[in-house]
Length: 214
Image: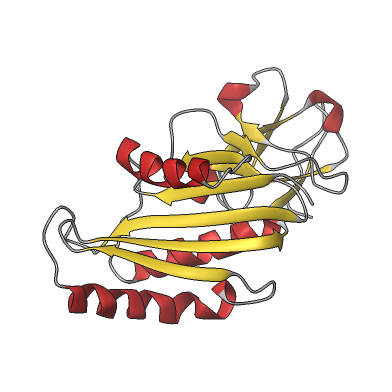
């Protein structure tokens, strides 16, 4: 079994982090907790991980306002219809919803005993897309360094990172989303994955034209 990890995704405040961290500590959780506004702010690698994904958001236009329980249930039903096909896909997780009427906040907790990072990323992207389609708004991309999370995976693609983290690496503009990435200097000729959109890129040498997607 790989590393245990909890990912807080969405509208993440200090209160949100504390509300998740405290019960985990009481239950003896020994893994890592990572908080980010969106999945593209995290580089997640690893196989056979114990993982909990917590998607925190508010009903569109209702943040900080009271909503009745029936309204929140209707909203969660609409969101779940758009993500059920992948959230409940194998490996089947435990799924729990938490609603707070006073602030119209909604929290979706998805717990896998064993899962690959690629599936977690797919689920997170599907949640974000469904939320946007229903009128939600995601936090802007982080201006901080992309966080690395998850265990080591000998078969994982080398990590690519935003240019600001490694000015001496090999620069690669993503052909899919346009984000400028930098691969480690020793990764020429290998493939790397864009943390923003998941596209797989071939790393050129520093003196060759930049390649596209493989």
